[in-house]
Length: 211
Ligand SMILES: [Zn+2]
Figure 1 (spheres, rainbow, N blue to C red):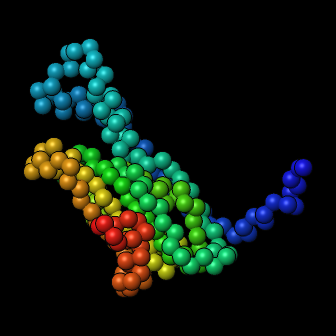
Figure 2: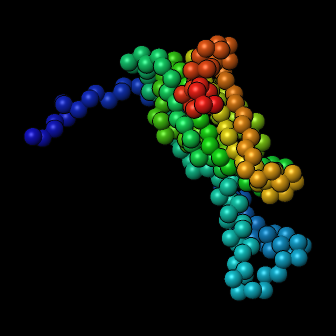
């Protein structure tokens, strides 16, 4: 049996697109030269054959950490009137601490109570990536994820929780290896309604039995 066009579900009639871009590495050659100079200042010899291309790799690695992939946030009308939480858990997150320029990484849990519009689930992960790939502090990162989604979705409630290990804390400084930092931002009714907040935290696995 062949599927005809008429049998396919009707496409959603109304969509809204927001194209998100980010500036690429400003000057790759200068970044490589600067990395070479920086390593020299630290007394690191680039003589060994295996290290001769290290400055270029270092520049590209930092460029990767600072440049999210572009994406289009497409929202759809909430035609079926879905009124329960939509949550993406354990979204991998990698960012750079703006104080030490060392990576911090972990996971983000993001969710919302739909209002007039809904969004493709993969876009919640792309939103986390977008705000992660820049010099950051975890508190601001969490806030930017939640408030940007609240604005784009016009949602009744948006919650974002980030759990991360900071290399600047685990391999230097206090050397608290394995310790993680948790930050959360609850907007709209999530900020006011303790019951709703408990439901959200249970769904992301941060409350309830065993926690
Ligand atoms: Zn730091």
